[in-house]
Structure formats: structure tokens, C-alpha cells
Length: 243
Image 1: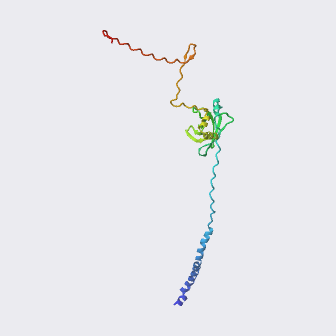
Image 2 (image 1 turned 45 degrees about the vertical axis):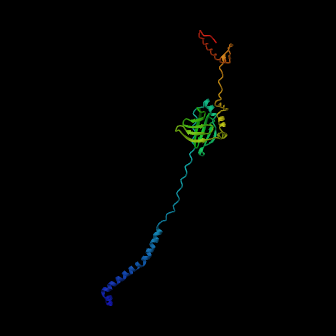
């Protein structure tokens, strides 16, 4: 039977086509695994590699702003202000929270002072006060520098707040360490008169009276009170005989 199929005309027509089809399909199945293995490698080689990311540049700190220029003096100091300026302590004052205030004279403008705190500078002029404290003012900015024997303070008078307090120059520290007597000396008090003890007040001096010569002599002693008059005698009744 097989021999008949191969020798039949139909078989002779179909066999060459089947053989050709098998020869074509076989290489495909033989090469498919290798092609499948090579494809991912080719794809991996074709993908471009990304360059490594660079660290982000750190932002540069802003440049320090220059110190603000002090307001220029706009008028000369009066004689009274020049006298008050003699009591102003100059130099560096150490303040609270490790801050500092510098006070220096402005040579081109007698009586004026430059007060510096941080990057701020103020041109100030001495003004009189009722308390005796030294007061420097910058009218345009409203800044005030107050100085008393124990310490100094920088404040904003327009806003009513303190900028920095408890500032002391070397002279103020020495006077504070010396006690209240030295502070009174800085205020100009030379002598303290003690008050009299309670109950020991002296009697007022007598008021002098003019004498015959027109001068003022001692006040006359007060005259003694007159003696009382004797009581009147009681009269005896008539017709009685004395014993």
C-alpha cells in the first residue's frame, strides 16, 4: 500500500511540495531560540546609557550688605549741646546678648556723635534732659542713646521699643564695681549731709529785736506772770465780844 501511494501520480505531485515545505520550516524552528536569545542583547546594546547625575550646585550665600551710612549732621551744635557733649562716654560698650555699640565723635562736626550698632550707624546730637541723664538723638530716624552712670541703652523712640540694653563702657563698669559712692561722684555729688536723728531737732533761733542803737539785739526774756491778789478779809459781825 505504501508503495502504491508513492508511485501513484498524485503522490509524485505532492511529495516534492511536502519535502520543500519541511525543509523551509525546519531551519526556522532551529534558529528561533538563538534569535530570541540574541534579540534582547542587541536591544540592550542599542539603548544609550545615561550619564551619571551630577550633584546639585550649592547656592552661594548672599554677599554681606555694606554698613548703612550714618545720617550727616544737618546743623551745628549749640553752646548748650557742646557743654552736654562733654559728659558723653565714647568707645565700645559691651551690651546684653554679646552685642556691642560704638560711640565716637565726629571731628568735622563738634558736638555730634556717631553711634553704631551692627550695620546701622546714626549721627546723634546731645539734648538736655530733666533727669540729668545723657541723651543723644537722631531726629530723622528716631533713634536715641541714653546714658546713665551704671549703663547705657539704645532705643527706637518712634516705635517705643528698646534695641539693645545693659551696655557698659570700661568707665561704667569701674564705677558700677566701686559702688554707689562712685556713681554719685560721677553725677557731681561731692558731699552727703546726714539727716538729724529723730527727736533731736534743734530749737529755732530767737528772733532779734531792734535795740536803741538801731541794731538787732537778743530777744527779751518773757516777763513773769503777776502774783494773784490776796483774798479780802471777812468782816466780823457787830455786837460780839472777842474772846
